[in-house]
Length: 66
Image (cartoon, rainbow, N blue to C red; front, side, top):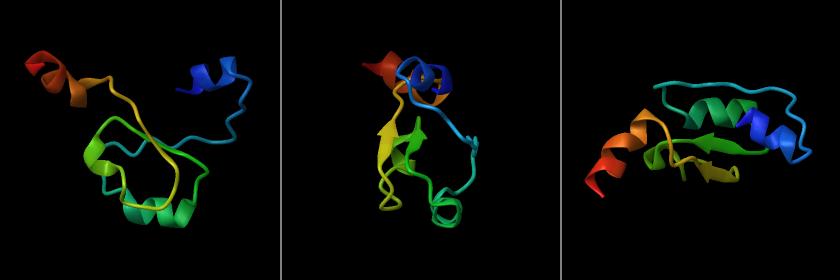
């Protein structure tokens, strides 16, 4: 994700990888400009602009079942 943003000319000040924890409270404290996640269930938990990343292990079973 960071490499892709850099190729688009977008600089990243900081990134947090919140593997497996509940995201809502952390996002409320950090108040990021964007939130990326590979699990749709973690999206819509805040009013922060969010992007679903349809790759990674969380999406493999969905891809295999399609």
